[in-house]
Amino acid sequence: MGTLKCRLELSKKGGLTITAEDPDEKLIQSIVMDGKSITLKVKGKKTSTVIMTHDKIEVSCKSLDVKAETITFASEKESVFESKESFEIKGKTFALEAQKDAEVSAENATIKSSSATDISGQSLALEGKESAEVKAATVSLDAQGSLDLKASGVANLEGSNTNIGGTVKLG
View 1 (cartoon, one colour):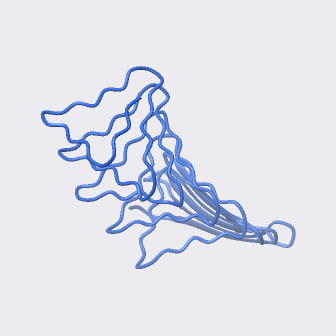
View 2 (cartoon, helix red, strand yellow; view 1 turned 30 degrees about the horizontal axis):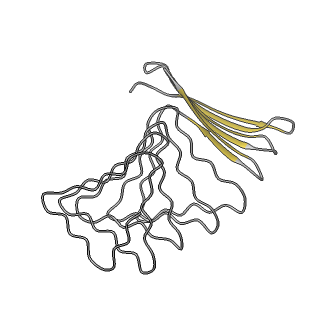
């Protein structure tokens, strides 16, 4: 790092500007307070900017890292998190809760767990527009009331041994 060129400008119209320039690194740092906003800017090969007004903070940069013991984001209205590439949320545990409706939408979706996966609700509807499969070493269906198995085409029930218990009505 060579010698910095530093400037402090005071103006009744333009406000306060503090500038530090490193000609060797081709880097300019500035703080501008104009009475309406505070702008922090670092300009080199890329430019990072923070603009703060009375009702908004805008951060523009190539990469943003936030490190803290705890982080809380809260908004009174809509919140949007968007990425043009991949988007990951990781944690030791993870909870997602909605007071009303929740929806997951994707071209392809996968839910995986290394041990147990539970899905529950007052009513449950699973639908495959073309097909649906359930595979496991053991599959159990337990209806507390009635159980209806229907097919608009052929219905097949087969196994190496097939047991049917209770009263059987055919036809």
